[in-house]
Length: 326
Image (cartoon, helix red, strand yellow):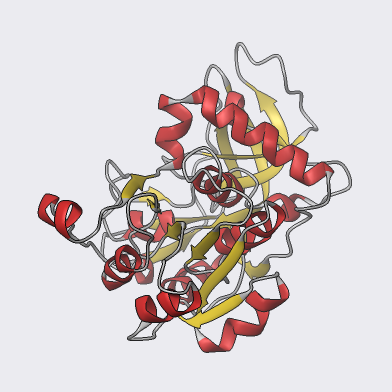
């Protein structure tokens, strides 16, 4: 089959299209799907650069998020049948291919009336945004939320949901994406490259700072986020490192940033706190039923253009969700 193989840990430029990849076999508790759309995520970039903890070693078939038609089911699978359309993730990779094996327990049915590509984000971006807002971030009506990378797949979902929950949204994005973010309902949009980001947030909040910050960038942005958060009761949920690592010390937490810093990895949340993940998914399907969230409209790339898609995502030159079509 055709697939994209990561051949080094030097980044997406070493992602190669191959035509002789072996079709994976489904193991116990797994389903084999014919991939019709694969989601592109920052995890794919982290794995390609070797910064994802416990990530696969090259050469490996890339891509963690795939949607498509079930063609075979493994031993013990009773909830899915061939012909069903599902979306799921496999941290070990394999989505950037014509066929992919998925854990059946983590496969979610594509909502009725949706094309498979419309469901990209349903098991990665949207649950991440919701977990950061609700069970971890404890969002409440009337509070102010600062959302970084608001034009991306996770950021867009976070803006929509935060507004639904009655929050005032301050969003960051590069200048060319501001109108996209405003159209989602953001109350204020700040240039993500602003040197005075924290000062702008403090000005917009009357000096109080944001009640909740969704921080998916890292590097200098984390420092700005800590400074822009309300003292004592403010929360910063960290779920991305694309901008590089950043350090925070116990001295700073005692004398400079008296705030709550919360780490979020959706894969670990699923494994370590399945009851919380179950609550997140139930809430998310309620938002789908209520029209708060709807079919995604990803930017589409052919499979061979996967290196281009990942490179553009890494450069923050994209808007919304990206899809590879095998």
